[in-house]
Image 1 (spheres, rainbow, N blue to C red):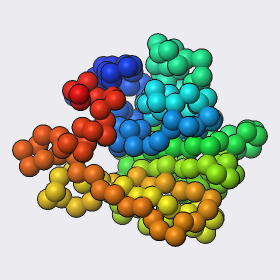
Image 2 (cartoon, rainbow, N blue to C red):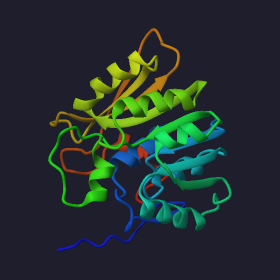
Image 3 (cartoon, rainbow, N blue to C red):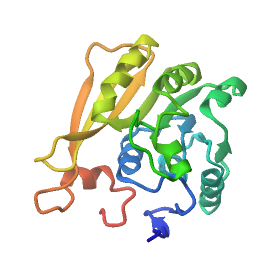
Image 4 (tube, rainbow, N blue to C red):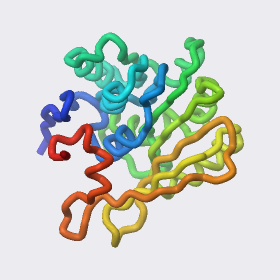
Length: 240
C-alpha cells in the first residue's frame, strides 16, 4: 500500500514532505538541532529535500540560506514550505547539482550542511528518485568533499551526518583534500545498541584534538532521553 505523507509540524514552522525524495527523518532532526548557526551569515544546504535543515537553521540564525537539490519536486516543495514562514526573504531553494553549483557560484559560505546520499553498492529501490537521494551515484564522497572545499570560507565549518560505517571513509577522503574532522557526535538509538550515525564537523584548519560526544536517543522504556529532548527542545512540539 502506498504511504501518504502529511505535513510535519514543529514549534515555529510546518512543512510538507509528500513530494520530496526524502522525508522528515531523525537524521535531519538531529543534524539541524546540533549545528550551531547563530553567527552564520551565509549558509549552504546540500541535498535540501523538503527544506527541513534550511528551515531549522533559519530559525536560529539571521543568515542567508541557499538549499540545492537535483530533484525538481523536492525543490518545488521546499520553496512552498519556506513561503509559509517568516524567513521566506532569506531562504531560497534551487534545482541544481553541487557539481554545477560550484561552477557558477562565486560566493563562499561560512556554514555548509548536508544529509547526503551515503549508500555505496547497496541494494536499490525500484523508485528512481529515492535511489538518487540515498545512493552516492550522483554525488560521490569525493565530489561532495572537493566541491565543499571550494565553497567553504577559510574559517567556515561543514557539518554532515553519515552512517558510522561510512564515516571513516569520508574522513579519509576529506583529509586528503585538506578538510579536517574537528568534532564528532556519535548517535545510538539506545544504550544497548551500537553507534548508528555520526554527525561530523570539518574545517580547513586541523585541531590538536577532535571533540567527541555521544547522544543516546531513547531510554530502555522507549521514551526519549533527557539529552535528546534538550537537543531538540526548540523544534519538537513535545519538548519543553
